[in-house]
Length: 83
Image (cartoon, rainbow, N blue to C red; front, side, top):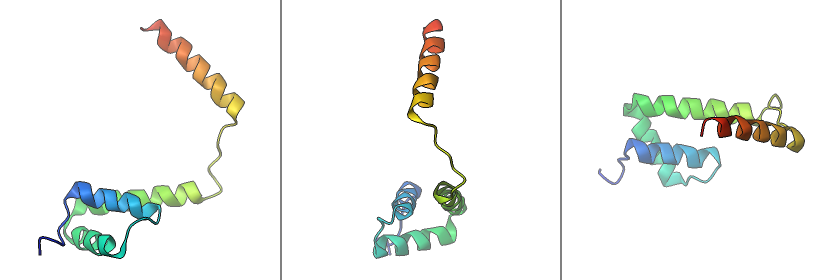
């Protein structure tokens, strides 16, 4: 029975692997058994699935490289004021 038990850290790792289709069948079986009794990991898995769905949707827009560079420069200037 101990071979089927996962800690919460291991369960979260398997959940993350599953997000990228890297989790194996045995890992998924152990994760599902863990999720039967662990509310915190069920919540983590649920949020992870929602995040994956959101990122895959067309509603997510990325900044272009010039805008990213401009933001980074402004951030670095402000950070330098406090160091």
